[in-house]
Amino acid sequence: MIPIESPGPDLVTALANARSAVEDHMVRADRAGIIWREETVSELLWVHAHPHISCADFSRKQENRVGADWLWWWVDGSGECFGLLVQAKRLHHSQSQQPHAQLDFGHGDGEHFRRLVGTADRLGVPAAYIVYFGGVEHRYGLSCEADDHTSQCLPCKRRSVSVITALQAGMLLGASQRDAATGTFLYSKPLEDLVNPDLAARPIQDLNLCNVDMELRRLLLTPQVGARLVAKEVFRMVAEMRMGQLSAAVADRVELEDDIIFPDLPLDSGHFSRPYYPYVMRGLRRRLPDTVQHVLNGKPPPEEFHGVAGLVVVYC
Image (cartoon, rainbow, N blue to C red):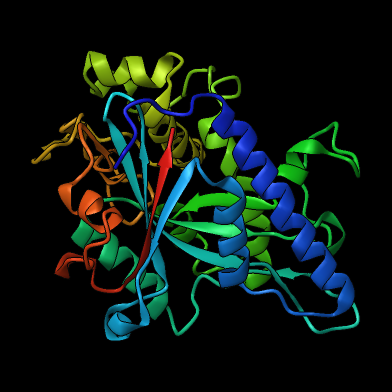
């Protein structure tokens, strides 16, 4: 069962410790010449974040239905939750005399990206990637590019396990794998930062603030906790990229249905493939879907989970 009370700020520490554990594994494997894999690193992440994270790994009996994407739900003590369909990606490097970092979102001629986005649409949540950048020594020059960056830069170190939305990744599909790695490192956010209220207190600057209702504007401009904090920080990544796009804001609106907390949203797309407000905010719900609780109670995944490898519930 989903606990009535969330673990609170200890989740930040739990995710930071889990990130350190998987970073240690990635570094040791690189030094030993062993190829570490996304599946192994993800399992280590969840194990070290337990009991703040619960998982349901869909069995191989459903192998014809199992995909590479995991459905994450961040749920807080009020019952509000934020959903993300997440696919794991790892950093690679070129096999050349001067190795450089590479990241491929267009794998399989873009089919994997389209499948991720399509499954997220069916589930009614945004899609994202969890990117494993490994240790600092194997990133081949990737950095936060801050003026005060050093070899011991903590923000860079925290990016060993980072998140970037599919909207942002879609902007990098046409780039080289080298540029995709650089852009992802700059635009992604460390996983633990999604739930750190100390880092998330600053307001979000967005071109469409004048076109949202008062409650949503309050979410974007004031400190948040729980599922609303996660939604705010995921939205921040997209809004910051939108601020760098030259197209003007659009006043048209859409009204979402079902249990969405903020159903009335601007339809501005910027240079993204679709409007970014409804894309992100559709994941913020008033309560956890019944199907999630059923799966955590040991029942088989429903048909709507077709193509999903498993379920992750994070108590925030």
